[in-house]
Amino acid sequence: DIQLTQSPSFLSASVGDRVTITCRASQGISSYLAWYQQKPGKAPKLLIYAASTLQSGVPSRFSGSGSGTEFTLTISSLQPEDFATYYCQQLNSYPPLFGPGTKVDIK
Amino acid sequence: EVQLVESGGGLVQPGRSLRLSCAASGFTFDDYAMHWVRQAPGKGLEWVSGISWNSGSIGYADSVKGRFTISRDNAKNSLYLQMNSLRAEDTALYYCAKDLGSVELRAFDIWGQGTMVTVSS
Image (cartoon, rainbow over all chains, first blue to last red; front, top):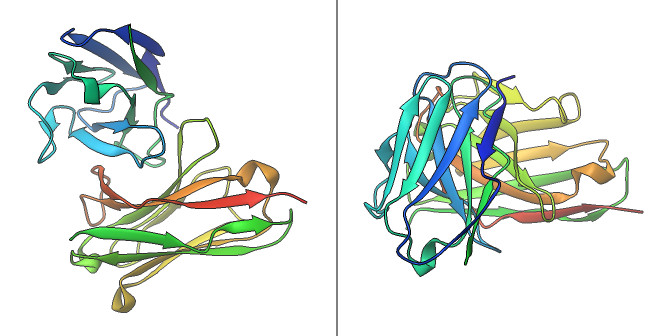
């Protein structure tokens, strides 16, 4: 199985900050990576798929990049509604495992 | 409105069975693969099982293989998860999720609100 690691696991930031989260795969997955946002008590929300394609309706301050084994999710200017947990997911092959998550909290 | 609504969760004793259902609306159900994803209390997301549009391709997490069975009824716009030999570690909120693709994995763009399964004596 392809395993994913995320760093950091916890991030404290302020409104307006530029935030970057990294996801690393245990083997190459081309661009078959998605990013999700989850707020407490809510279902996950798809932000980015195919490593860099912004899902319809997602604000342009979110962007994704990378290919192979290293990927990043960037929030260009953190907004109050962005405080949440972020997960990456590999979709190169079954099982489509998720990363352990990065919690973004208010500084 | 595109929507997924799960049902069938509840409290069940270890070793017993439970069947989850997911009702889809607002999109052409038989055009897309579907998945079950679970989340134990306070933990991360765990993919459980997935099924292609025509049920021709099915996958399971190792943790549930041989105990859980995924199925779909395209005529009823419904997805199911039959869970047998339940264990305490199966306790979680179970989400139904729609794939962007029909067979190949792409990403999970629509999620239900989840149904809670608690396995305890």
